Length: 115
Length: 112
Image 1: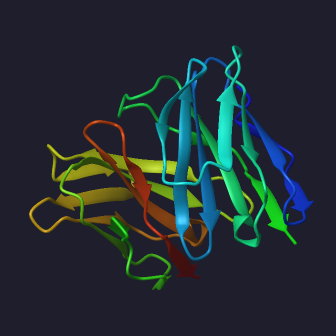
Image 2: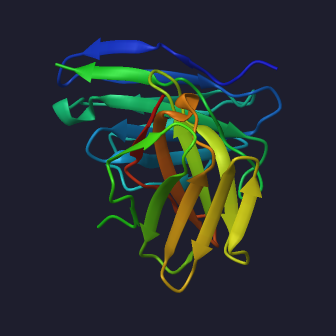
């Protein structure tokens, strides 16, 4: 079974631009979560989508948004990029949402650099 | 305010010996804890988890211990192998499923 895929793998943008990242979950998985990883902050939860609905949201500004499509693929958008948005953005999928026994499977991440 | 702390940024252990990675949390609403391993250029991989109703969970070379009164958990790897060299993240989830928090990670180096 193919794993979680994320595109693009690397991205360079300038301040003020916007960016869209894509995540394709494991086939059959309906929950997709997004995380930001930075050296100083570690992994921070952005939001979770399940059946095209945002179920949970972390403590990030409104510049960070996402959506999920009917095929469970998800996109994350960051508008008005800031230097501090440079990070590895990870997507994780799981079968369902809210079940603690469900393992999250992570993708390889998208490395975003904001210049 | 970090709700999940891993106070050791790095740890070096000799091959064959025990690796002990520690994690502390502050939110008493956390009731499920997970450990992930992360290699460079890859996403985190789930290792082992423990529910707050247990104080120990074992899976092969990996054992997680939970001390609820101290709000502390630890991951033991016995015996450590060079392939275990990675960054280990502790994560915690609350009983509403609303709050899922990772620690900053500990870089483990297993020396041959």
